Image (cartoon, rainbow, N blue to C red):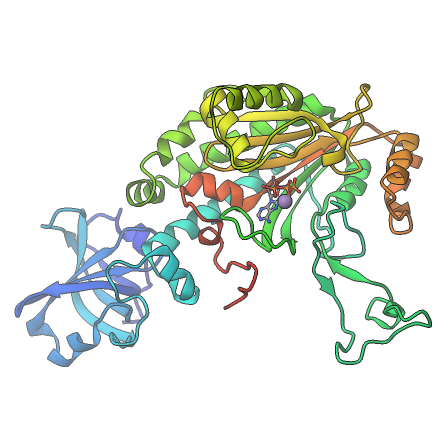
Length: 467
Ligand code: ATP
Ligand code: MN
């Protein structure tokens, strides 16, 4: 059997009948009668299965007992035109080897109707389902699209550290990294933890953003992007937050907020178009199974320019909505951070298209954002999407050394760990901008999945780090 080279099922399905082939994969279903068995085989190269037709006279009866859902097979045979509907070709088997049996009584993917919630409890096996096959292939395409987009524009892929001593967002929700013995923590004379005894000789954590280091790259080679894991120990059990997620953070020298908005819009449109161009089979499956509006919603963001609106204007719209009887769970007035319900109202009910919010109150945004003339707003920028809410957060950065220092002072931040960052404003400071796209938020949009736990292979959320 091994003298013939294996062909992946995706390729087999578009081959012309008549050739001798070798397929390998996992059994999805088996049916048939005394004379003939039909086996649906899948190898993950495509959502479609190839049908194996096995004439029972050619095989030992015992063989078919081992061909159960989940078992792995190598099948050799002739590719023939299929009589059945649903596929152009099938394999008329001449040789079948069971590579690995699969006990039908114990295999976790037995039940016909497996809910997404149940599948999360068997996340190590759920990748074998059609749903997660589709999600994984789309995830892969999106990662490739991201690199393609930036590569075409001449951006440099910058690898920023995962272990850091800075808290970019000032939010404080970080996972500490330590090799100290937690049962015997060294203390200094004042009774505080003596981090000089720790691995790095200082207190360190997992990064919540690569942006600050990204700015060092942008002010050296012009345009960079990061694409890596990001960690936030926020205890928010929402369908849009993970403790470990992937973020894409472009950072560009000589870009103002308008250049930044233009790039963000072009970027997400490119990614959505890429998914439509490269993942249609999987999209159709997800559209039919989970979200009837998926493909239409994806197409709807492409043709039109996103709505640009200031935070202050958005507050007025939301306040008017409340006055007209719209009910929100959280109150909204100038100075509050919008909740997902407010963002979705703006996108889905008011403007009916993606929205780019700018000019936020400085008190709800990070210290590094460029301060506006009015003294109370900063040049932040959030991109809001239907069904998701915030998908991108970014800003023009404060380029003035004096203003940046004043803001750090005003917020009472410790400068000790920030001098290296402030150096970008000391030596050849330039106007610059950037943003962060949550990779899994993007995937929510292009898969139609409702819960962020279902667009990453192994989700990490509060009280959950299995597999
Ligand atoms: P949110 O208000 O939704 O919590 P944020 O303001 O904390 O978002 P940023 O700090 O601006 O988000 O991060 C940039 C992007 O990273 C967000 O627009 C979002 O797409 C994504 N993101 C942020 N936090 C998470 C998380 N916990 N899990 C997944 N993606 C996230
Ligand atoms: Mn957040």
